[in-house]
Amino acid sequence: MKPFKPSLSLKLLQALAPWRKAPTWHIAFSGGLDSTVLLHLLATLAKTEKLPPLSALHIHHGLQAAADAWPDHCQTVCDALGVSLRIIHVQVQPGASLERAAREARYQAFAEATGAGAVLVTAQHRDDQAETLLFRLLRGAGVRGLAAMPAQRPMGAGFLVRPLLDVSRADLEAYAREQQLSWIEDPSNADPRFSRNYLRHHVFAQLTERWPQAVSTMARSAEHLSEAHGLLEELAQMDLLAASQASAFPWLALPSLALEPLCALSEARQRNALRHWLAPLTRLPDSEHWAGWQALRDAKEDAQPLWCLADGQLHRCAGHIWWLPASWSEFSDAPVSWPHPQNPLQLSGNGQLHFSGSAPEGTLSIRYRQGGEIIELPGRGRRDLKRLLNESAVPGFIRGRLPLLYQGQQLLAVANLPGLSAGRHNGWQLHWMPPTCDQGLS
Image 1 (cartoon, rainbow, N blue to C red):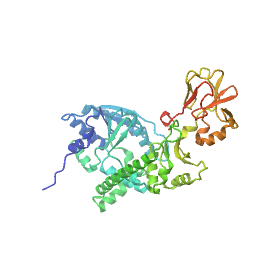
Image 2 (cartoon, rainbow, N blue to C red):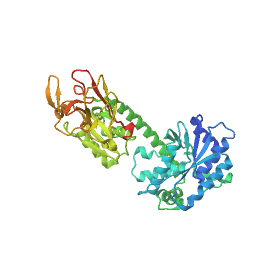
Image 3 (tube, one colour):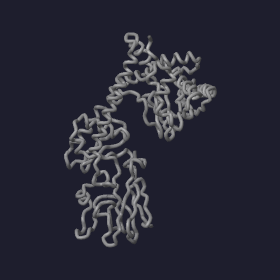
Image 4 (tube, helix red, strand yellow):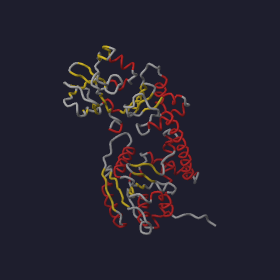
């Protein structure tokens, strides 16, 4: 007796069960075999099942002349199935890898089109998963990369879901023939100059000839690696929780971690925690560039080391490591007058200032450090600002951005620093809200 084999429709419903209450399901519809089968399955199920509203998204990359006819084909298919279609034109940025550039443009468009709580459903299948695993293995990926494509992940304000990862390409082809579906054959899919096509048509053809179950076993390996990656993520969250200690500068709302708890971990756990922490902030370094972390971590106490990454820098100051996005230095350090100090002052690329208490009278302005500044402190006389900043252990990367309050040529206060930010007699205090990653620095 043959084992029960669930239908494609049943598999699809089971995979999408957690998303049945989403406000809408968008279907990534290229017009090719895989997405045509997915669209047909969902449109057919919608006739008998209570599903969220369906709509299709077609991304037009404009990379080949043949693609100009594809939106019309997709519109015809969608009209026949009663599914609305949105066609999105994207600009593919030139680069070393056309495949990667097209994918980035496509997924950026998908993210922008996926509203709050909505689900983008894509048609990647088991063969795609095996190809992804091998492709990343050849690039030297770690556990995170070898976990291949996740069945679900955040996308824009909603989610991306791949419900066919347990379905073979052969099963999709059989369904398409049975339903007499028509689809687009992309000429570029046969071009062996593209890495994935070479793997599909040359490498996998020989692998499956020798090992017929190669695709399914490789996809199963990707599942195991995905589980291992999940465990590493849990471990990273535990380690990062221990390192998420408040700094001595709570007003400095940049991502930071306490260094001591990190240094107590093994080298492998340090890298694992940092990968998890850095992932939403920057493209991650390859294996060779992790020496930069060791240099940052092991530098002398009085050093101010930094680790340059793709999208910013990691600094070590005051017992913490701090993430500074690449745009951190993009601000104007020109003096700014403050004619109405009773109102907050917006600084160019440098956040906002305001007073608590009655603001000082007279002509006020904001300047930034040039060197040699002197401030007069009650009971301490005239003091060198550089020495005072050293005594307060103010991180070096923030010193050039600290707003200095002047009345004429006299330095009255330094925003946010205890003992330096308040008036001597009338009780006012200068408060600075620096820009954050959430305000566009990342």
